[in-house]
Length: 299
Length: 332
Image (cartoon, rainbow over all chains, first blue to last red; front, side, top):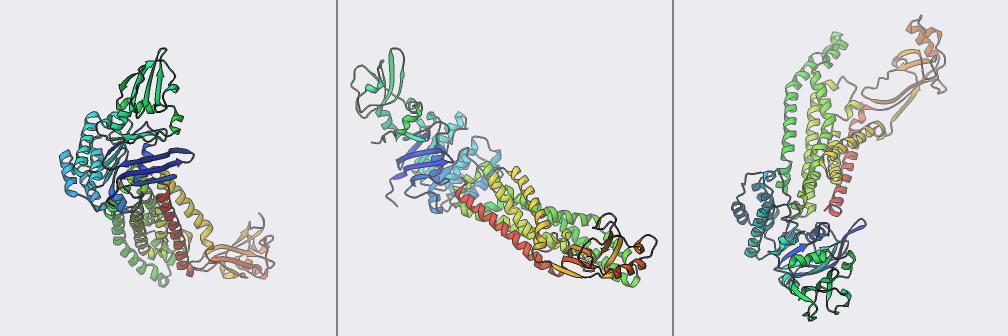
């Protein structure tokens, strides 16, 4: 399947737990070769989406395709996707070396040399039990396992959430090195944009079980604007300008607007928006705003 | 997958193997002595006319080991369920490591099959070995006891411990799978296993085959007791019998009138305190009493063993099937 260009494709994807929808009506088409950030508040459905992608969960509605195959599946599909679950679980009673042995036993494409090199570079003691590793070392071990199986896609669920700033930087740095070396695609989630800002090419904002916006970071930044001007009703904006968020004082209105076209209205002061404000604008939208799925902002 | 399963199971396996080895040594050292003692005292007591003394002396041998084997046979299977079964999946779910295992290039069905297969077979092998050792060691003692059909011995001998271990193991795995926490799953395993085993022993086992019902004229040789306080009321006549059915499991032994009533009427005068037993026996003989016995003969021991083992193994298979379904559909 050499012609696969979509690393993850979802169509009307939904997952229900009893009466609660953890993810609904999710439609995505993520091109290969990207580092994709999945951002949203806690409980937004990020883990559900990632678990559907790796095949830990089965969808209630819709379909998902990962690297052109349906998860979960057979060992061949599993071998193509590396995964680090939330909190980076490892076997606390097994040593670092035994984890590598585990990886070698369970993965036909295992790269033992790379795994050993990575452990050495990280300064992990192969004889150390995983339970005794520091909070920063354990995720690194889990990431090593996921990378050394030589996947085409790497999925990481909140990989840096529990790390201190220094360990966070080291982890992301190690991740980016692997991405560059091996040319793998990555999907990683976080509830903090700041974590993703430096590494992501592509961003998905997930709030209240729905995808609010998804697209190339550059494209998102160039199509979203911060408008400041005298107080007015946001409903009276031109058709092609979608208001993401609005705040008013007595005299002033501040809007976050998405549009493909330049804004000419002289009443507005148009300023660039940074990724954090963009994501916050989507997160602070009223819950029902997401029901009208934001048009795919791609190209 | 086999390596990982063995690596995770190693500690528990070593502890169990150590305990089994210690017991094996103790039994191997004392067993031949016990057998020799039986051959030289109980086996020859008929000639010396001192059998009751010889038997009670022999039954007092190795009291500690007798108690220990009883305890080990009682606790062995449920310990396997608690310490091998319950943590098997619960421990992984507790730590989230099942997500690590399932996202290697191995399907979760294979993961489960290897775990269940390996640890399950080990459980059955351990119980089988234990039963073999204990059955061998106790054989001289069992020859003079109530027999293997007796409820107190039936579950400690032969092949049923293998069935118990398989069931306890599958029960532990299932409890762990549903509860997600090792310690509560162990407690549930203990409680459910004890309940199932008790109900089975008290209510089910006797009915695995239709019992033998023996109804005949009272056999005077079997009468061992007479007096008042029979089933007919405080002043009614009581005749107690001890049937000579070696090793049988007797559920009912009644003495009735010729008409079939268990109320034998008032105590005959000649069975009172001032008369000899022979006088009383002569009166009883004229009453045309009957005896009703319901029992499972000793010869059915192995049939019962196979039936009970098969039932427990079937329960284990059902539970394992449920685990497969649950892991495939419900666990994430």
